Structures are given as structure tokens and as C-alpha cells.
Image (cartoon, rainbow, N blue to C red; front, side):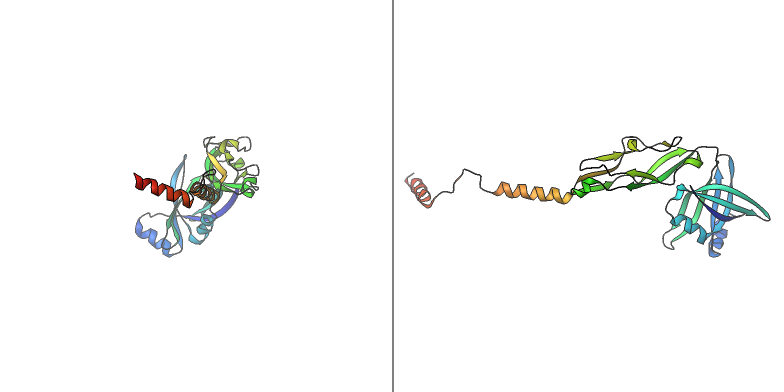
Length: 227
């Protein structure tokens, strides 16, 4: 797992006013917590935090917090569990850091990366990605940053499911085996084209049926008048 170091400071106040002042100073309010750790209020540099968030792999990046409390400093390993985004200002308003213990199993969501070229796509099919993350658990030291899924055997009508994925010993996948990750189907354009062709064929005169000749039309009309 990639590990990023982030400087943090203990903060004493948690109300809206102090939080606004922190943001005005280029700092983001945050909290550090864990199953066996009392929550600790922190502030971190907004610029540095934004770089972590922009990686787009929130839980699959370890964050080593260098926490300063006056002259005292401590190091804590964590993951960025949650963030509050200000969509108007495009900034992070708050961050939650969850403590990691290297001797305890951790459950996280990691991104899926499709590798290889699906033969079905070359044959005119469409590749659909239906699942982009896997929920896995294991000791932090063996958890992967990303899960690669090979699609080089997928023809039209084929799919790869969670149950097809194999990870290192000690890493468990928590999603159901029958969940589809990716599939190759007949392209929508090909389906529409086939439907159009079928409609066109249905409108054509069936084989073995001749058009009525002019003479036959006249005889038909005379017969109708006689009646």
C-alpha cells in the first residue's frame, strides 16, 4: 500500500466559528478515531489534504499522521475514511481519519482495474463495466492498492464475476461471488440494425405471391358489378 505523510495539529475548539477561521487560514478541520482510540480533533493543511483526496483511491492509500500537540509529536497510521466536500468552493470542509493497526484485519473498498483486450469487443460487442470497486479484508500489510481483473477471455455474451477473482492468501473478498464485474454484449447499434432489417423484410411482398394483372383487375371489377 502507498503511504502518504500528512502533518496535523491538535485543535481544542469544534464549533462552526473556529472551524471557519481554520479554513480561512488554509487549514481543514479533521478527526482521528478508531475502535480502541478516543476521537481526537485535528487540523491539517488544506492543500496537502486536497492532494490525498484527488488521488481518488480514498481507502486504498495509507495516511501517516504526524500529530503535533505543542512540543509533543506522535505518529498514527490511518486511512481517509470520509470527507465533506464543498462543491461550490471545490474544497474539503472536513475529513475523518480511521486508525490502522498492522496486527488487526482491515476492511476497505479498493478500485478494480480491467486488464487485457476482450475479443468480443473486436467482434463488434460492447464492454460494460458494472462494478468498479471490491470490498476486501485482511491485514493492512498484504492488502492491495488495486485489484486487476483480466478480460482477455471475454467473447460476446461472456462476463467476469467476483467469484472469478483470485487474491493473495489472507485477503478475503466480501462481495457476493455472483456479482458481475464486467460483461461483453451485442452492441446496441447492431441490435437496432437487425431490427430495422427485420421490419424491412416484413414489408416486402412474400415469395410465390404474384401481383394482380390489369386483366384480372378488370374481371374482378366486372364480377362485382354483376352482383
